[in-house]
Length: 81
Image (tube, rainbow, N blue to C red; front, side):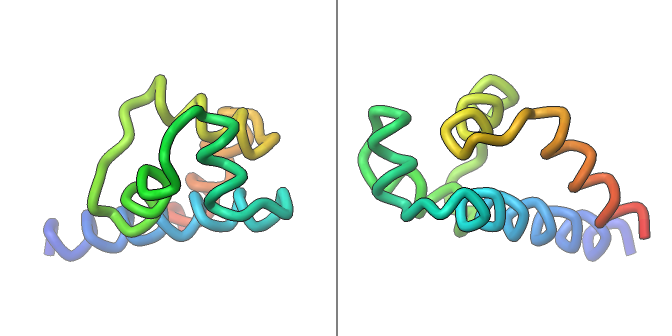
C-alpha cells in the first residue's frame, strides 16, 4: 500500500511540474533556456527519470513564473484529496 501511495504522489508531482510550465505558456526548451540547462534536463525531470532537490525545484518554479509556495499549495491540494 505504501509504495502505491508513494507512486501516486510522485505521479501527481510530475504532472504538476508539467502543468506549471504549460500554464506559463512555456515549452521545455524555454524553461531549459531560463535555467541554463539543456532541454533534456526538463524532459528528464518531467518524466521522473531525474529527481529535483528543493533548490532545483525553486529554480524550476521561478523559471515557470510560479512561486514555490504556490507549487506546494497546489501539490498539497492534489495529494490530500
